[in-house]
Image (tube, rainbow, N blue to C red; front, side, top):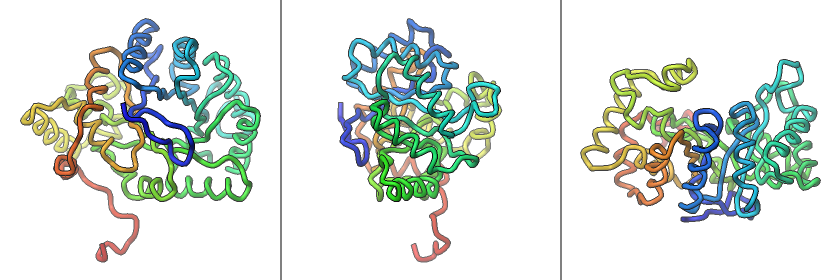
Length: 320
């Protein structure tokens, strides 16, 4: 296992992160235990969670699994999304963050969280309030590092500026979506992360399962069948064409498409650790095998040519 420094922090994390969104929601407690053990046996020390995953079940299961060796692992969780019907039971206010951190600590059965993410940008709460609240959590020893999830590049830079102005805990890492079908973060987010020395734990490396090939021919199941959000995100002709090219390349070269798709994400120099997930051992095995896939620049370029790259960040494309 290769371990990488998490951005500008002193923390070292495995080059894959196991996402636990399926724990208690797709994978029962026993299966979750098997998935966790399989990841640990591969050398993974980095586990991602959120307060809303499985309506809190994911944190509870993860808390049981890490308890006997808490200091050996790096765990993350997040807050922003609604946890109830009350008008203050969502967002990044001091009230909501404080309540949700305490609830997460209880469910995870731990005294501290290694990385605490703001799960989404909140247009109703000043970032100064949110970041000052997280800084207080750091002073209390309840969290160690601060992360941002689903933030645009300008929102991350605004947060970085505020932490410098207020002399609060710096931003250590970000969590954007990144896969061969969704490459928007290549335009500004990933270059910004490299410039600012931020860790990047990217999610959805398999494009909602599209890059496994199981949805070819509109054979929808799981999230692609039941989630309108995923349908809007991935179901279009260009993505279908890219998936067909990708799966053909994988078959022609005797590569597992899961391993190949994750290795492509890992090969970007800004990426610290893609977040992988699974509902069973059969799904997790090829994801873990991506660690043994040393993707060449030639293969990365060939795969990249199969999908649409984002426009560059400036309007002066003729000078590139």
